[in-house]
Image (cartoon, rainbow, N blue to C red):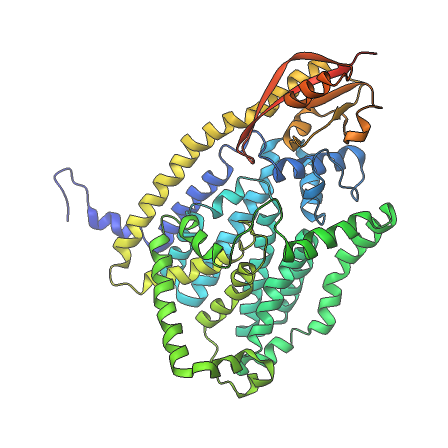
Length: 502
């Protein structure tokens, strides 16, 4: 069919084959991930990670994680080692900081396409790639330098390797699986074990593949996978007498399971609801998936009754006769990439990040089974691309303007405080990005230190007025500094002061 201008619609459809469409969308994703990444740092985590990495380059100390206002953001070191290597090669900058996370998100999207292709075919793989890469939340993780982008990449590497091992039993996939576990441990510790280890345990319930799971030889390979983490932990323990390791055990294992961190908590079902927003504009597929599988679960429970609980008990697994299917593999992967985190007291958006690739594949399969799939896909994809363009060219530039507050404040404070003097910081106003752009010594002090310390201080305007009224000999320098702390959704009023004896 040709219109008056000689334009062939049939020819256009033939040109936009599945593989060509994938390559076009891949190009769009690459532009989105790497465009505009020179904007100012995002608090809190990103700026803290940038500070750790730059400090490692400057001090040549790759065991210590020391940066002002950043104690709660310390983690196992692989992300910082990689970033510091990039800084050393290319020089420290915001774009270089975000280069590797962007590559990790790109790699995860490609792994999702690959896994879907071998499970369901190229068209469904295109759908899964589009859902993951052009949804609201997941690709943004490639534009902010957080450790979660690296963790989800290693998690997906291990998940894909596990599926290949079950299907082919080629021993190289055993190596890739345990390498993913080992590197994931060095990124963030327990989450990689929760996801991949928990999935392997659940796969033991399927008689058809139980022997293949045991042939992963966890009693041999798991201790080996721990070696890099234990080696780093030993060296770190020797350096600071165990301060960092004890803190990490308390903060990342004990507290996360029992108490909210950073004030972020929620009841079970928080992520169930959150996915409706974060998968926009593919949310309708997500709701359709929940509706279909929810009714199946209800029907299954009505048939089996309370007897279904026996399938949860490992000593009953030999009696089960569940066949191994791609969809069952994916559903079991959701248990410890998503459902496990629904029952933790702490709720952070990044916790179930490993569930996004798996859900994207399941939603792609959901879409592929609809009779009007191509029409729906084009509608959703069009909205997605408009959303991506809006985020790239309108929202992120405006957000970048807000983030310039700390750069301006750092410049002003640098002009007020002599270069060879330490800036003492008092109060709960710590902003890692200010410390990064200030790039001079900052010492955080407590209430007890105020009466004895002399020199230059960064305090809130309210503290300055209170302590001045109480007779503390402070002299204000310059005008109050206004910084919008978007992580706390409030404007901070800070002031540089000095003691009168200077």
